[in-house]
Length: 184
Image 1: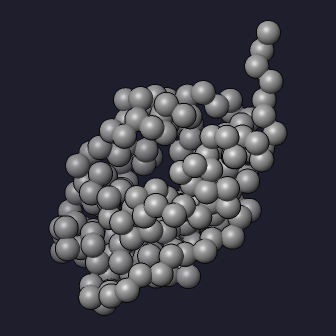
Image 2: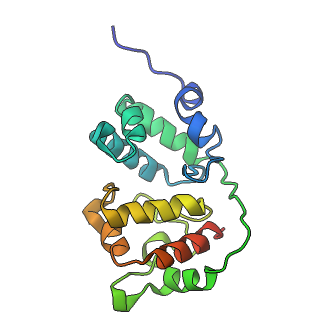
């Protein structure tokens, strides 16, 4: 007998909320906030995680996503996309000026494209293509950029982020992460 699907709220409560929060505002700086994220992006990431299973470097999302149906993935994505992001605030931003420059101009001499060209001038993302970055946890952003650079994160179509991050220094990553975390 096929397993009955949980209602969306129950699904979020039982599977997602422990890490991402019911409202999508993760309290852990290493776990992404999903509130207000582009629903098609969340859904696509869940499908990619499921395809990787536990083979992804952290394996957690693969192990969770592999047990979700396509309908459940779609509903979870819709749930979080309609929640309001409450960005965390952090203190000092010593690299914010460099981060802003990189966000808008990139680093052409290092073949690093501007973040704004894909993720928008306010970090709002491009629906159905590129994720919202504004207000995301600084620590999560820098960790993801380092994972892209190391080839550990491979959920980027056509290796776009891996190619960009490959040419970024640790300082560049920290600076742009610091700037993005304060976008609203």
